[in-house]
Image (cartoon, rainbow, N blue to C red; front, side, top):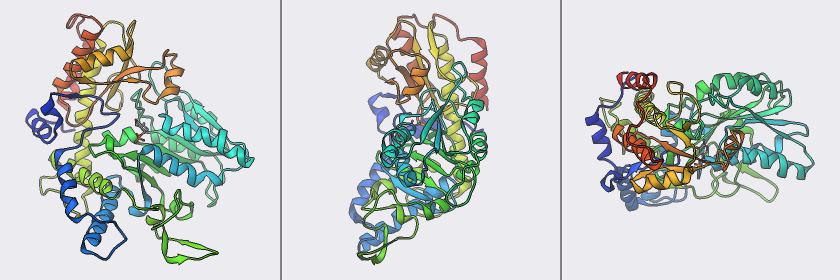
Length: 467
Ligand code: PMP
């Protein structure tokens, strides 16, 4: 795995505005910072600003081309068969709600949904609400079941998950990467567990549907929906260097073809095919694109993906930013390998440094195990909120909260349900990590390097840096 040399990292950092303000941006699991070139692109788009699918002007036609090409870029990025599998939303949260509303009418009395205790509230509360609030109003009782995780290792308890799935399990919902524990559940096994349900789906297929919340996974790995074989995958671009406002729901084309839309209105109907007694829907993917979409956001998101390939030098042959050319899957692979390697090396460094602080407990898998690039922790006798504020006073941006992983905090008995979290992105440097670790050490009143880094952890840092 190729990691970034310090000169390469400097060049990457020079493409962002925040380093000029001496910000140590380590709250990337919440949102990342967009490159300056993306804001320049948005400014330039103001010259041809127009709606899509709604005009004959050159401006509208060109904007439509760019908007539609963005779907293709995103499809290639996640190795989806085509743009027909995609719908654009405001966020991962809205994407998961879109899946919920599209599936809602299909649930039968006595069905169940299986999800996990390590989910972000976005992948629990909609299913809880469906089971407890929405379906009971239609006289249907559907149970929401929660799989446990190991409190020490942070790993999903696959046996427990499997024990919850039965012939009435219509849907399994699982995170691809926890935003609190950092755990990356083995999704192939989760797929097999979902398949083991004999649930008769409306299309005749047997087995539970699988929805993956890939909000964190997408930010730090190549998400390959074909390989995951998931029925739904949700993620958002503000976690991978794009501006706020665009989330994606991938759904298998066969599902898209039969499921009802989440939103009804303009552009999702076939041109001229609305009558008092019937309405015919537009072809995919526009059937799931009612109303004026976040056009600039979608274009900026897809172009940010292209810019990432250029920024990390994943394709020596050419530049991809500001073009609509079909993106090379190999370039995407190479780019995300570099992003993943860099983020993993920073995460190891942070874990090694934090582990040397007395009374500090890191949640989730041990150093060396697969992890999303974040570290959540608590320090005995210290409020995580005080730590985060003390970090901020030193220019280190972290987050203290339950990170919307409320169930997991309760399950671990963390009272109040909160932890402090630092999380890393492509532009973070080893110095950022060291400043964050030193700031935590200061915040809890321990002198600099009061305890040496345990040698086992030192190894893993060096190993990661070598690869
Ligand atoms: N799921 C996970 C795992 C997340 O980390 C987040 C964001 N913290 C979300 C869902 C929600 O994402 P969004 O803010 O884009 O709705």
